[in-house]
Image 1 (cartoon, helix red, strand yellow):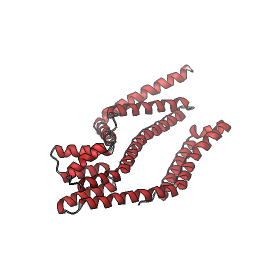
Image 2 (cartoon, helix red, strand yellow):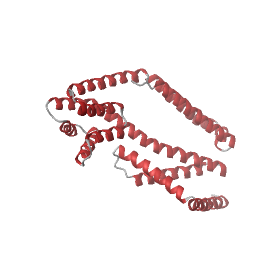
Image 3 (spheres, helix red, strand yellow):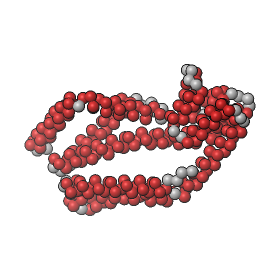
Length: 288
């Protein structure tokens, strides 16, 4: 490497460090509040999926991957401005992907819970019909079901053991998962507890309704497969086309990351692809 270029890198690194230090001292309280807010959201995201990964470890891994991506983008650039742009772009993409990973973990957790919910309601109905109390029926669910259903009901039972009222424990459960079918189940249990009624029949009808909804949702997913697949292809097509053209004419396509006008075009392309993906997702997303 050219010694002059290495000296420029070192000066830029030292200047960035000094600037970061000054900004950190100047806005220490705001940065601390922002960091605590970020750690709180991350802690909540990890806890609600019962992920054994600690918040501090995830934050370190996220920071490490983001820094590595920024360094890679800086090395691959051509010219200081291009290097800074690629570093910021790579860091933003990796940071977004790690947050997206948390969202995907939560979606998978809710999907697994949703698959177990109708059977769990059926077990509750059979247990209540066999003269079990509601709490005994919930305890039976913890024995019969694996996680996430078993873990969620165990948490409800722990709250009841600690003295939390039955209605409040169900409300906490409903708010924790924010699932429509679970909201209906918790509401039915609370209303039956207050007004009475045939709980076994209520739970049987609820389980049948949940199974019917899942069947219809499966049909809808099958019918909208082509639309979702088309949306995915249209989203990734510009990226694939860029790399193909980069192999064919690297001098011309490389301008996108070395010139300010190219940066504007890249940002515009990302915005348009994102907007198109959201529109397609909104079209094929049907609520039942």
